[in-house]
Image 1: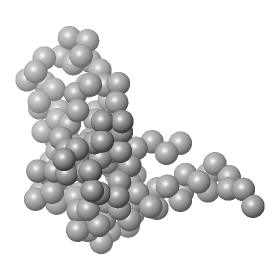
Image 2: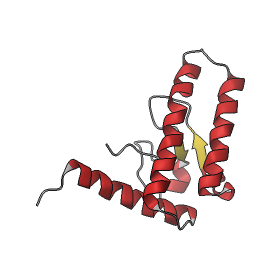
Image 3: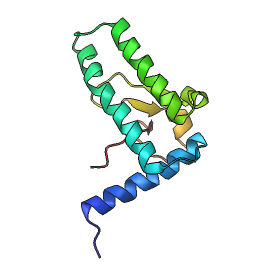
Image 4: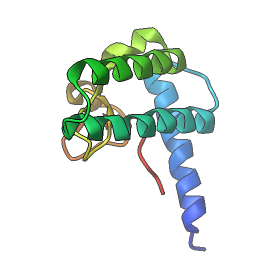
Length: 122
């Protein structure tokens, strides 16, 4: 029987949550983890767009990024932040794992091979 879009999305979220738990050495609810990461990701979208359009400066975007990194550290552990960077190009995902680290990981990746923390499975 063919999966519905909702069933496929739920399956993808569950798998991604499992992968994140392994990568970061966590044992947390995978759906909550994915939803929390997605909220941080989407909260970066507008400021990064504004930064690229010259509406906010380097100091402001750095302040915003640091606030989101604090939330991220609480979620995945401060020690895991060394694997993460914020991509300032608003055309793609903001929260990424460095490609040299993610190449051997089971995780959703973009075309550049970067691990994506909060993909949109809609």
